[in-house]
Amino acid sequence: MFHQMRWLALVALACFALPSCQDDGHFCVLGYTTKPNYDPNIHTIHVPIFENNTQSDSITRGMEFQLTEAVVRDINLMTPFRVVSMSEPADTELKGTIVNYTKTIINRNQLNEIREAENDLVVELIWRDLRTGEILSRPRRLTPPPPLPEGAPPPPPPSVQVISIANFIPEIGQSATSARKVAIDRMAVQIVSMMETPW
Image (cartoon, rainbow, N blue to C red):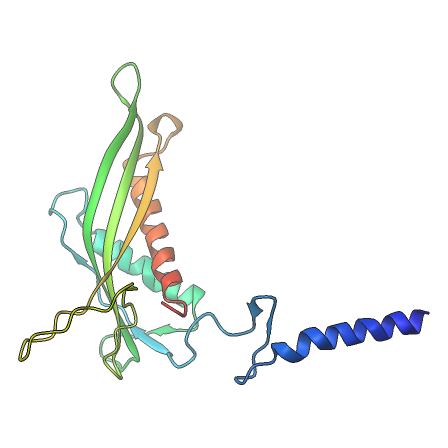
């Protein structure tokens, strides 16, 4: 009886394993796969310092450096890609622009002081394959773009917009500065997560 149950278990396991083998040598069982999360053909990436198109005031000054540093850190930690300097050749390039950073008051206390506020960080990204010129960060379209008129120059590459939100409550010791760091760190994680295949 024990041997018969063992035999049935082996047959059941074979039934799951055989159809899960794929042409590329990876397995896929019940929606799970051994394929890597990132494109194995990409090894290196340039990350120029992000542009900052927000108003140049004390709130957003220097944010582009902090965000670039956070993105480089997370690429090195979470992906197989290696960030290289602009003087070295790279497979791809990730360009980003901070287009908006706002602070919104959500709630006030009885003394009209801020009880809860929210920081919103908006970044536009273009991730380009430098070997082929292909835009890897192309936004998904439900319908194909309209055809270009004859002789018209090609449109600029489409960017992907990413939004990061961080709340803070001054009464428990949080501040606009700590919320800014949280928004930047969350943005970096979102950007690196979007680099998984497929975009």
